[in-house]
Image (cartoon, rainbow, N blue to C red; front, side, top):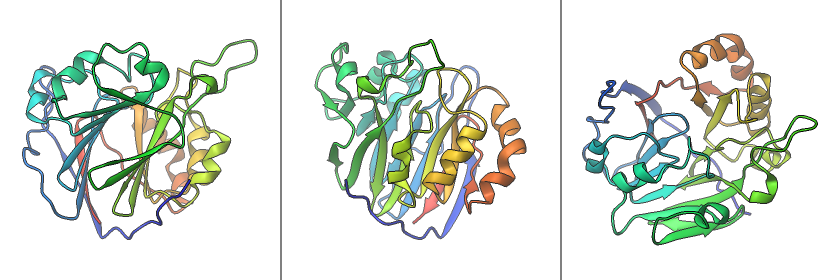
Length: 258
């Protein structure tokens, strides 16, 4: 598996998107620009919307309102089949006839969506000029229990390579041994804070960052205020790895000039 070396980031700007209880819509991002910006919108739970090179890629979108049809997807990437990551009603809002829909084979087998593409860890494909590599995603179970994300399911996390600027979305993964393969290979890491679902939580997240060594860390999959508590507890440890924390609330956006 080949990964592109990181590129230098010039600056980051974070701004709040309009979000209300009834409508949570990124009204500030109607048009895409074909410049060097990579725009990251944190959606609900583990949902992320990435805009770059004139393309819009969603990862694990759920609970989007009908207004998001104004922000159609060029591609939708699904990590696994749990309801807080895979929601066909949301996919139907943002997909078009030309949308590339990618998901692990076990998810595709139960999907009612047409034209989906099945993938497995280590698969790679292009979305326009953007290279996507599927990586491993599984969790460890406590003694006497089954894994909620078995390695045998071949669930997928994703590395999004935008002209050498690499974003890694881990889905619900635990801190797995395969993360050593990602060391110094990604610029931005989206990692779950948990708890629940056997995902990483607490010091496990810190240890994963110490292995992957991303330049930036964006928390995903957190309960209300859990991101603030986590950063207050572990922020100094994370920064000791040379990693900057970008603390976004749901429906906030961050723009990278790469």
